[in-house]
Length: 131
Image 1 (tube, rainbow, N blue to C red):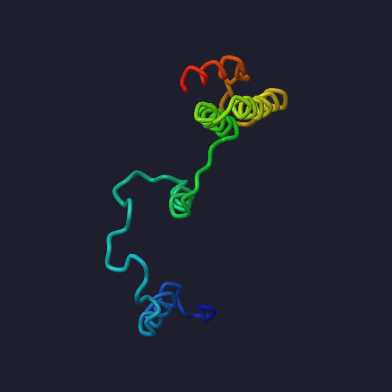
Image 2 (cartoon, rainbow, N blue to C red):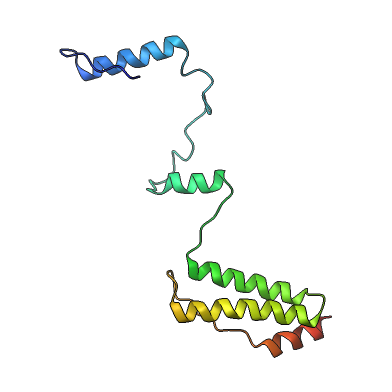
């Protein structure tokens, strides 16, 4: 649809003609979701619907930096509990502690971090007792 609306023709008439001609050419045939109800039509209006839909479609997610670090810290503790050796536990905890200290020092956007570096000796003790 690259044509310009001719002068003297109402906008609605011009648009209707463009749509009718496109339908006649079959340009609307086989569109995704053809013949199906519009998804989420009964839900309240959400201005971020397209962002959420794209994230779902691409199997992606977004967390504010503070929440992402909290999740990473939780995953690190889980990895430490399953580590195969004490040096591995210490390395995992040291790596996440460095990230936590950097975040505290520089500040991250998002909700409050509410996270302190982990006590390496405590994590090692828990690792020993779980194995």
